[in-house]
Each structure stands twice: as structure tokens, then as C-alpha cells.
Image (cartoon, rainbow over all chains, first blue to last red; front, side, top):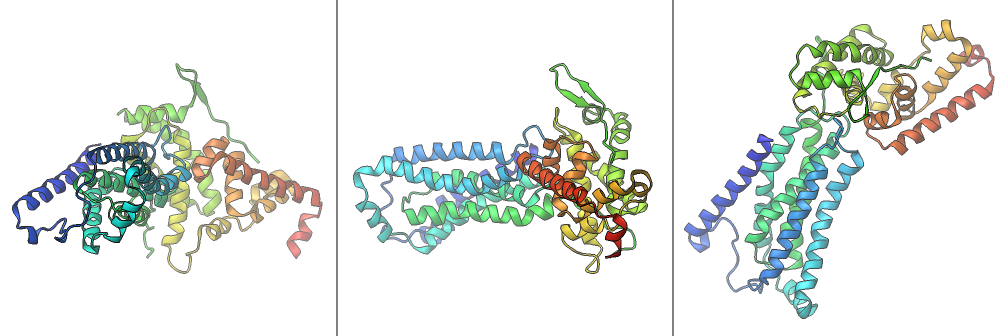
Length: 222
Length: 203
């Protein structure tokens, strides 16, 4: 568990560094959130919308952690299907809940406002910055989870890795969401949910090597 | 075909625990002396399983030691109340697959070919002790897809429950049950065939 704490501490450290850089560096030189002047109509995001979605995403991250990281009562962990479900359902749940909360909070201005928002969607760099930030927050927890389960999964290391990646990605989304002021559907997909999928894929790729149980080559063999 | 019998004890809450589970819990709690009990409870079954797969005493012994090493390394996060046997067999199975892959391109193959390779011919003791019927069953087993055969062997030869076998194989209980069912069907068909074994061997 100390590894997990270390991973989340890394995520918080990144958040702190990001805030310090944003506060101290000139606007044009910011490393994060280089939002083009001229304004995307996203700064007036309803506070209730942001808080509600943050809480809902926090709950999703907690449930995903419970299913995807803890092993239940078996040394082999939960079933491969459960792990796969975590990897697939977590980003889908983030999208679904964002859509639901957005509809509830923004119903008075729907659907026209959303179309306008999409028309005036932020630049690719804006999406990339949010995606990068979300992924950066998630990398620490991901490697902490992987280290915690290192060489401990003899059955389905790839699926375990994918689940751990999705869980870490969900935490990255939870940490980064309050810092983002954009409600554009395109931006939510590219900047906040895509990193979760990317982390799940990354976890699956690393899972076999890091989580898998491997035989030591016999003496004299290649 | 032998069926392993596991000694089981009742805990305070009435749950049945094998001696291996109880010993593993003691070992995980820091009782180093309990490792001997864990080894004694698991090693014979694991070695038998590995021998049937590798057909090589040295390889099986090496994989057994590696399996026990993984169990030793994993003792720190052993879950109280968890069963050690499916975990141990899953480790042994994975190490077995991995060891074949490590032998290089000549010996490398997918898991299915590896598991098929382990059963090129019926065991001599089957031929001697169980006769033609056992040979026919064994041959039917060999012709099964590896997933079905391993499920059958874990349950019938290692005495695992369906739930344990499912966990070891990384599938659901329903999936393990389906594999068992198909294995039974294949064996039943082979037994109903009635063709003499010696004729099968000449084709």
C-alpha cells in the first residue's frame, strides 16, 4: 500500500508543480493549458455541474479501484472478465456520467449551446494539454499499482494491466477535471476520456511483462 | 485415474480449509517453520502435475522449485482466507508455458501446442494398471483441445473443485463446467467406440 501512496503522491506533486508553473510563468509561456486568447465559450461552466461531475467521477474511480485493484478473497484476483470489464466500462462510465450530468445541468441551453460549443471547440493544443495532464497524473498511480502486483498474476496479466491502467486513468481524470474549464463534448472525449483508454492500453502492454509470472530460463539454455 | 484427496479442516466460521491453506496462512503470518507444511502439502501434487506435462524429472523439479519460490515471494500479500492450491497450480501452469517459450524458436509454440506436446503417448503405468480402457480414455483426453484437457485433469486428477479449476485457468465456473462437459462427451464417445486400442495405434 505504501507504493500506492507513493503513486498518488507523485500525482499530487505533478499537480502542485503544474499550479506553481501556471502561477509564476508568463501567460504565453505556460507549459499547461496554453489556451488561445480570444476565448472559447467555456469559462462560464456552471459550478454545480463541475462539482457534481467531479463527485460522480470520484465514485467511479473508487468503484473501479475496488474492482480493478483489490483481489477479493482469491490470490488469483478477480475473474479475467471482471478485469476486462473494468478496462472497458470505466471510460464508458466517465462518458455516460459526464453526458448525464451535463444534460441535467445544461438542459436549458441544450442542444443549441452544445453545438455552438462544438463549433467553437478549443484548439488541438488545448485538447492535448488536458490529455497530457490527465495522463501525467495517472502515470504515478499506474506504476504504483503495477509495482504492487509485480510478478503476481499467473492467469491474466494483460487484463489485469488493462484494468489497473483504466483505474489509474480514472484517477488522473478525477484529479485533472477541476483544473479544466471546458465543457465541449469533443474536449471531454479527447482531453479527459481518451487518456483513460490510453492508460488502459498502456497497462495491458506492460501487464504481461510486469505483472506476469515468468520462468527463469534453465541453465545452459538461451 | 486417480483422484487426489485433500485433508480439510473446519475453521471457526465453519468454512472448510485445506491443510495447505492453514499452513500458508501461518507462513504468511511470519511462521517460517510452516513453509515445510506448505511444501509437503503442495509439492507432491504440483510435481505430479508438472511431470505429466514435461515428461522430464529435472524440468519438473526445476519448475516446482520456481513455483515454490513464487509462493515464498508472494507470502507477504497472501490474503487471509484465500485458497493456496489454485494459486499454486496457476503459477506452476504459467511457469510451464513460459519455460517452453523460453527454449527458443525451435521449441517455441503457443500454449496449445505446448500442452499437446506434454501428452504424446499414454503413460506406461496407465497401460499396466488400467489396461485398455484407461488407454482409450487417455487417448481421448490427448485429442481434446488443451483448455478442455487441462480443466478435466485439474478436476479429475488433482481433485480441484470446479471453482478452483476455473480460477486456475482464468475462466468462469460456467466456462470450466462447459470444458468438463465437452471432455466427458469426448471420453464417452471414445468408450462407446469400442475400437481396440491396438488397431488405433496402427493407423
